[in-house]
Length: 156
Image 1 (cartoon, rainbow, N blue to C red):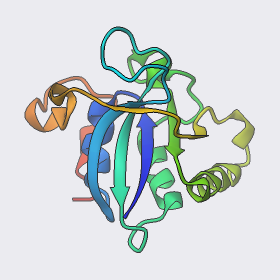
Image 2 (image 1 turned 90 degrees about the vertical axis):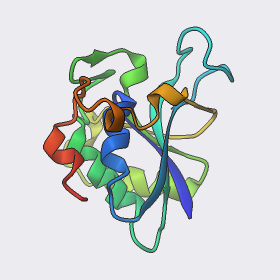
Image 3 (image 1 turned 120 degrees about the horizontal axis):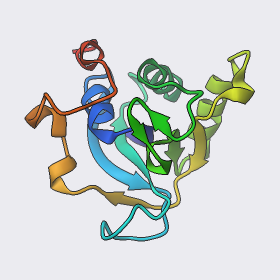
Image 4 (image 1 turned 135 degrees about the vertical axis):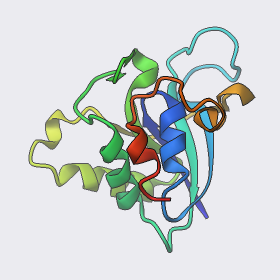
């Protein structure tokens, strides 16, 4: 198994979508690339992410980027749907340089790639989100989410 951290706005909908993807083994909501090691206080520069454990024999990082681009506006800066702020930026984060190269190559295929706001960065810090945020839309399906409901079940 390999791991990447996917950011696509509010983690509730991203997790609901990502956990249905072929080759994804496990997901966990969290915060990445901030400056603290706790969930206390503000987000301190963090981005909401889904820790995504996947089988590279079944799904590639390029595939995961393609799936992510189905549910985000990759040109939007710090906003997805009604969610606005630094914590709602989009990206792929990893400790594996190979993952970062593959994700950037995916973005570079777009003619207007220089306008894409989706980050591709090394993972510098990760904190698991509180239990109340894990698989939130499974428990509260009517909560707000920027991801269309029909996409959340597209791959199941």
